[in-house]
Length: 243
Image (tube, rainbow, N blue to C red; front, side):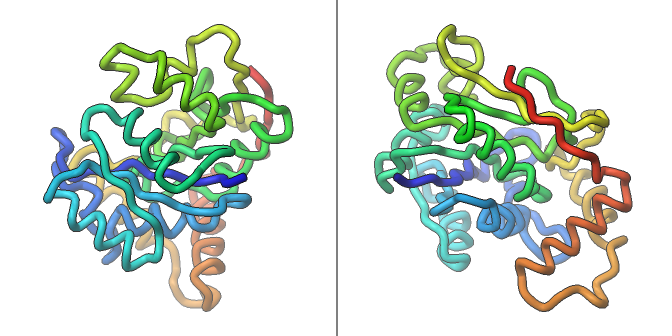
């Protein structure tokens, strides 16, 4: 039974083309997302799901160099891209959906979303639906392979195909859960949507002192995360509730 984090990535964003390849303090947005996804508890493999075109070659090269899997598929039908990735790598248990424009994705919060789904036998969990209390850019969704397959077979609206999970969010009979924190920080935005977001997020990263960070990549991320949370008062107790 395989659990995977699947990161959807492309370079053809209309608002900010190539944003996943842009660098924040010398590291690409995509590599930051992959680095953090590899630390999510209970995840067996990380897959980067990209469009099947030559423009995606840099995405493939980053994923390859970081030792994670790749799959390719439709650019616009992202739901099928997820389903094809799951089929390709035998992901038959749970999928975590992550977008490649969230360089500060939190492995701990992602693990809570995954744990809620598994502990309560749910079909779909999220920290952004139906209620968001975390900053934009910490979004993560988890769903079973069976739920993904049902959406792939039954969802026929272009919006549902492009955005992957709306069918899961509204269909009766889908057992859903929502991870929330007690203090609402949903007004914050840590996502890369526009070119100016790079400078804004880089300002956060560069304010975190590098001296004294522990040596391993895992400990560096843990230390950086802790300092960033403290710096902007984001270290709140998580309140986990089924929706």
